[in-house]
Image (cartoon, rainbow, N blue to C red; front, side, top):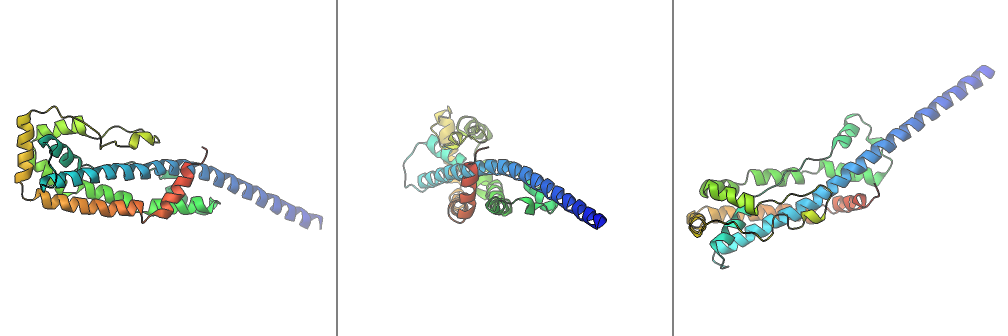
Length: 238
């Protein structure tokens, strides 16, 4: 009996230690996952703000080109250029990938945290909106139509502002802000006329707007569970 009891107690102690180590491991993974998702929450809001700016610029450029709005050549070029823009952010998914590749996702006891991570890292919206921006036919047409030196000036004077990861204030109007190109009236007029004379610019700009509206709807409307989960995680104390 002494031997049996000793073996039994040894097994129980071993199991208790193993369970304790698993809990510790799970807690460490959860801490890392929260840190990753806190950055993902910022990226989510950045994309909403940034692509909202791109869409607004595209709609202004289209209104000018269609004659619904009167504006200077400079305003047309600035908005037409900004409509070509896209962003690619480095995702923070190392912890999630480690959890799923090793089958350890069950160590995350917080179901909301686990579910949010699974929704965020399995969503294609981030990759889709980036790839569509990169492969945009409007972007390609604009780059082919407007002189390189004008594009370089637009990028330098009216392009993306630098943002700080985690800083929510810096993402507001990071593209849609007042600016001046400093280009001569001749260069501005020439660039604007090249856009107006290209019969494909307006149709491709309409396509760009339609794609952006679809993706913005997905970000704002079709992913409420992701947004709620990220908002909750972003508010957690580090």
